[in-house]
Image 1 (tube, rainbow, N blue to C red):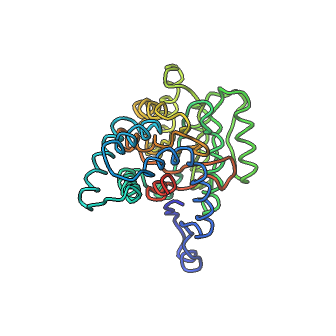
Image 2 (image 1 turned 135 degrees about the vertical axis):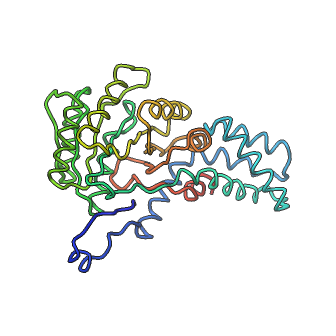
Image 3 (image 1 turned 90 degrees about the horizontal axis):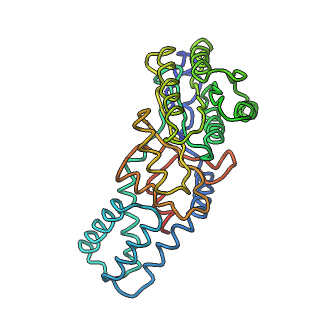
Length: 325
């Protein structure tokens, strides 16, 4: 799930096994089934390209169109086409069906730089600031991430710094109760003040993780983007090394707009990772290829639904296989 560097006493180290960081095979297979189902709209339009009888310019033109429709973007599409043609030439492949396997390899290689584990425990607490536009699934993703962190043995403190949206505090409080973790919140308080209190409390209570939920906003809302910068500055006053992670939650259905969000939020905050949500039923799953080619911010997690177990670590080859098998 993630790399967990929690410090233990010598007695704990001798008595307790290292926390599991990999899912049981059966659980992972179940997740992959959900991912394949979720990406079917994207994958089926690409897969139909390889039902012909020969490898020619028409096949590549059709594939180009399918990749662009899947929101892979111009740069990633051209890169994949050039790479695929090289692979076909080197392997002397003549079967169009086999070309799909080569495309899978090319896509997995393109996505590989996005595959990186979230590291917990190098700092105590590890302060994770989470941003995103309204409707991307930010607060729900925080709830799911809290569940996974807690399941793997990390102690989590939530910071309800989304004081802008009505009922956001209450929504996060529900997630805190569901995951039986502590939460710092204020009724109508200043978001930066909530974050300062949460980081201070996390240090005092010896928590492993402080998860900060910020207000959803569009990059064009300059005053709200400035508030995000303020939150980051105030967090640094509470802990000079923090935030240790700045994550952006993006909706996989928004395609190229998601790439624009990555650019804008990275410029404002310096992103360290992404959570890509709502990949179930999307026809725009190719956006991860666009991100890999144009703005390769690591993708820590991807989600295909609302349930706690429907947010999982991103693995490049699994994603490529789920998309194209």
